[in-house]
Length: 76
Image (cartoon, rainbow, N blue to C red; front, side, top):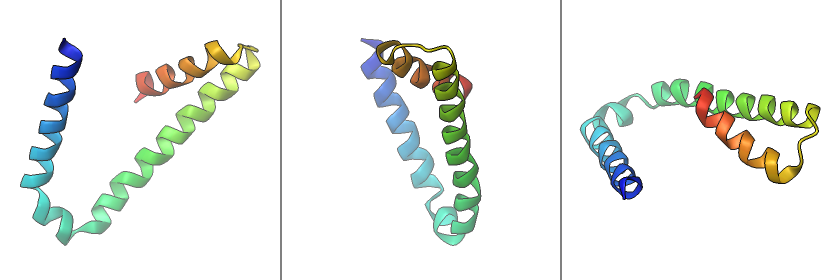
């Protein structure tokens, strides 16, 4: 039950944030890029670390694949 409420709350929060900051986003797109690029790089780096760790530990795919996602979200 809380899963759907949480998802809806998160989506509404994002819509509100972006609607209130729409002018800033349109006026300063470089700032958005400066924020987005490090976040994207961080996500890929965390995925790569988790992937390499699972390979080193020789975990089977059905165990390693969910672990990579969990590790990625835990470190963000």
